[in-house]
Image (cartoon, rainbow, N blue to C red):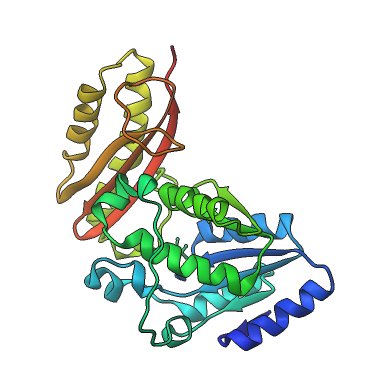
Length: 284
Ligand code: PAF
């Protein structure tokens, strides 16, 4: 496995692979890899000839400097994991490599898709994500790029950028990997205390309650959201950032519980922000 931090080294390797007509799979990450990231790698290895993982904690996507400062970094462990999974190349750039001084910073956004959910409560977040992902796509020239569906809005926003700006690649969403109790795997989970980790299991239980109440006939959207909110708030030190119901494609707020919906939440347990979502088909 190659580990490179310079753009020139990355470009040389890509040119060689392109010359040999290998297809390239790309898994962008911010490190602190867990089984969810390894699912991206596994899918990439099945679908392409060469797999690149990038590890870069992107400063421009953190709207909260404290969150950035506390983001876990475990590069040595990450590299061992990548090696054990047969990754071909890890791109590990420094901040100054990705963001050399520039007097004309660029901002990308897809306002319609960013109106709700994390786009609403984390101003600037998706601008930062699109900026870094666009740069990484240009540098790695992948045929396919793999993103976890836990970050569903991110998946939609990046897919829309690729479609809008004619990036020559396919964006593939990989299902969320979960702990035994159903909590979505996240690099942030390691920051939960034992007590907070217990509280966090309210999240998968809330999704189970959401499905159960729909199956038993609940169709009042406002009441349904209240039931789910009240359930989450039984946990100590839980603060709801958002609990929203939107359509899974345009991410616009739903007025009624019908068709296919995306139930998405962001919840602070202590000071750790956790997100999760499920697509639910509402029976007629
Ligand atoms: O999902 C992430 O880890 C990040 O948002 C990404 C896509 C690597 C961009 O920094």
